[in-house]
Length: 233
Image (cartoon, rainbow, N blue to C red; front, side, top):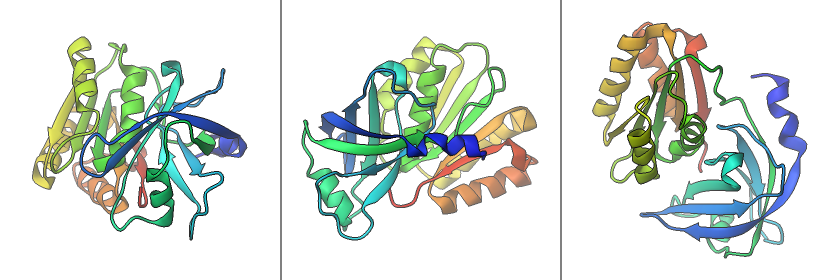
């Protein structure tokens, strides 16, 4: 992490909701209109507040941005995680036309270069920054990029990810539903690429720690890890 990763934290914008929907279970996906020339990097996250809403306790939440600027909108996703916090109650009650305030986006969870193979490991809502990275690379056929995405039932953005895989032979998604299948999948990739790939990990902090430990035992150096923990999305 470098100080330059945080410079846009002080940039504040009010964005208007253009679409929000529940794809399944307790997930919520929100699409926001963005002003002209509003930029961020794939993998960045913002700090979001709800202007005009009385939120008890913590009045902000960091969310990874699931879209890239050239799509023309900002996309975020979260889960209710019952019982909902006061912030989540207000967020889930918003409607199209309401506004959300974002500081940033900013961060360190970025594509490092234009040639190194990429292995992405996401659990649950940790798919959000990975979707942005996949969108950034969707026309990149110069290096392989893999996604191991674990969710116990359904997988958010799966149809879109599969469509990208059909159009780009360099992208290889794997959908796991349990811990054993997840570990088997990413260790196979670690065995193939070794330290010649970057390993992007997003999800629960405990799972990230366990994943780095498993990869470390497989010989992957710490310098090859880029991780994005989420805390109570």
